[in-house]
Length: 298
Image 1 (cartoon, rainbow, N blue to C red):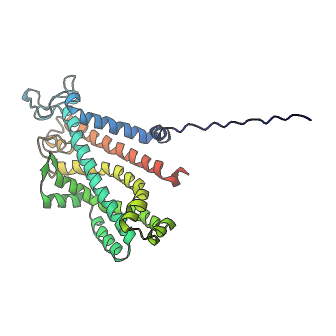
Image 2: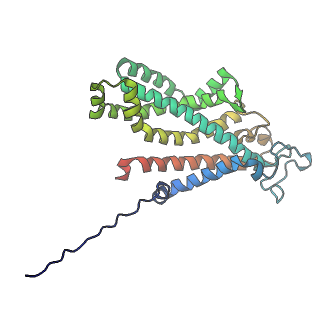
Image 3: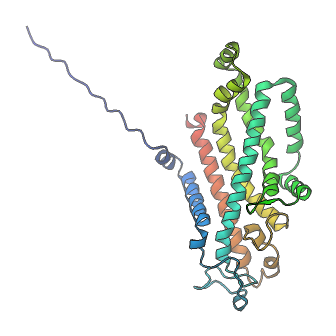
């Protein structure tokens, strides 16, 4: 008899990579946008230590000074350091951008889930209201809301401005979330939950909401860029942030329009800040959509 020995085969289970590292390797452009967002947030949070000057300090001896070692991107018509005002302006842009996007996206998600789940006349009524809101361009609707509500400053933030910017986002988010919720509502486990006698609240929060988180996060991120641009536009028109609060849109209006030939840096650098911020959020939002969408991954 011959003795036979069984061969032992071992399998190595590959280590699961961290989601952040996976996102960086799979979405390099999105990672670059995220890096700029983090840098901008860091500068905004630590603005008192990062900014070289007080953004409100007036120096009449340095009015319209060109870029130099003392003032890297020059000064404005009041002698205020433009770089310091851009750094502090990031606070306004991010605060209004995130809050407006959160308010608009969250309300839109709630409306979309309710509309899809209950359907029928409720769905028809909600969608007609969304159609009315969609018929207005975002900036026109924001101007109308700001003009009607006026200003309501709480903790240094204009709440009405956030509502005005967030409201036009509601119908767009509602449409996207509704389409996802409609597909989920017809799945067998949702029918089983209804048959078991579970309440509408439990079914919505247990089965519907978790499955629409991905499109909600994508829309939330993408709309931050639109909110920043809308805040800058309203401030430029005099309906947003007012002097002397640093704001990128406000820096493009007023004296900057009068001295754009003599001091072009008053317009160029705030405009670059707005463009880079919007571009970074758009890159990150598009990459996040591609990364979270299983159809695109396949």
